[in-house]
Image 1: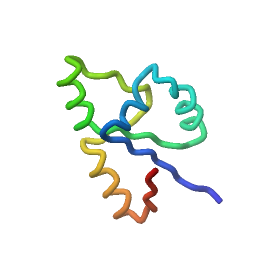
Image 2: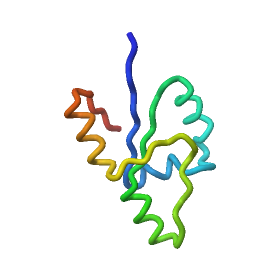
Image 3: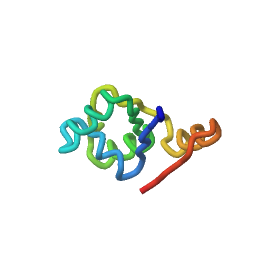
Length: 84
């Protein structure tokens, strides 16, 4: 069966989506297979305050204003929510 998958990261999970992260190649491979990735803008803003600069997010990763809000949108649209 065809399955739509979107990985939404907020809080510490956004580090997974930093440009140059050890998992960047893995993420790119998954994106090439149709998996979508979304990072939380609120988290990026908070990290920027602590780091003194905005962390660069890997190319082609979507940015949602709020990661938790994106999860709620997907849930309301009938998506099954899984978390590690």
